[in-house]
Length: 292
Image (cartoon, rainbow, N blue to C red; front, side, top):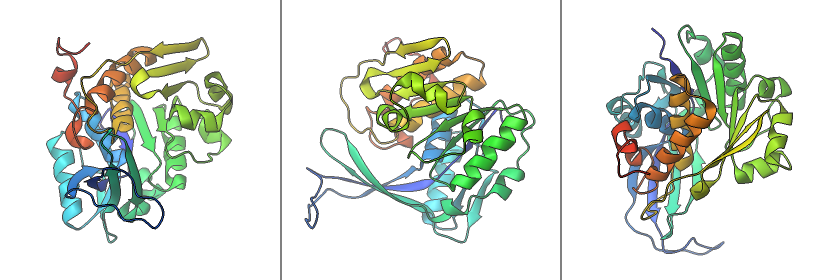
């Protein structure tokens, strides 16, 4: 039986180093010890969804190397179905991440095996029983466009985390149930949040960091607050945590506003721990009385 939630996207090994400040051009800055963690926007989204109880499968690719084994182990231990993750002849994708003392990060991604995720991989998937397909853009754009088209025709709701921003066909935008962007990406796409719907999607969610999110529908804009956390340790993967939790709740039948409220909690909790996937909370942690 097909999982109710399907995620199409990247799987990367995150090579994380803490630095006092980011180097300027031509400058060398000493950092801390390198930490290797499982990441990638697709894998992060799938793990975040699985941690809060979703039945989710990832469509993606890793290399037949140690980093690929790390990713498969993280996905499977979190409850993600990996039967649609293929092994590529290319090396596993790697993200080189620097984290400053304020918890902010800068990232360079080497796609590797992620570039091998193709339309034929999508065509091998049965969408019978699927409720939601969630995509992100660290895999080839043509594969994402194809997947959204196939899912839409199959009556599956489609969610796209448009990060990084890329130019999509007008038809693809019209096939989107939910477009997810952060406020900087939203500004690149439209002069105001309500302008996002003029691009074609049925709805949009704009993530606002510590301020929560804005849900944009034909009825108007609903602001969803975040929760306060004691300390921001690392923001890596917080946007993916939001996308995964939102998708998980949509697959369970929540309204978009309710799903966004839940996702804002998950994203906030994720920044209180280091790394991406290792920082994602469980459903029990999200529903804890200690969480606002």
